[in-house]
Length: 62
Image 1 (spheres, rainbow, N blue to C red):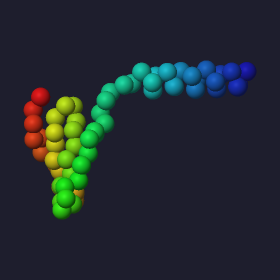
Image 2: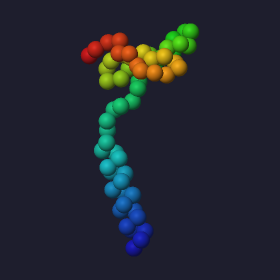
Image 3: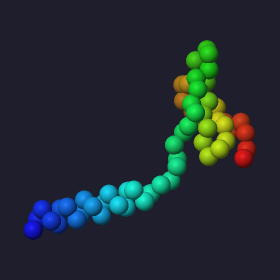
Image 4: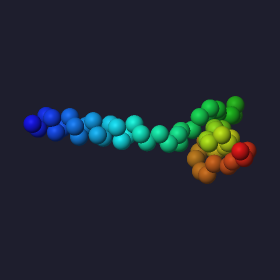
């Protein structure tokens, strides 16, 4: 009985995780030749950020 309850709990968690399909991934990342900046796309816009970290600057608007 405990195995059945554990399996059903696991199945329910897996289904809820699979349904959360928010595409928040950074895509098409590229490092500048001098290594100082990183460019990436997010939500169909292009951003640039220092390789040391910080706030990303949006370069395009969609």
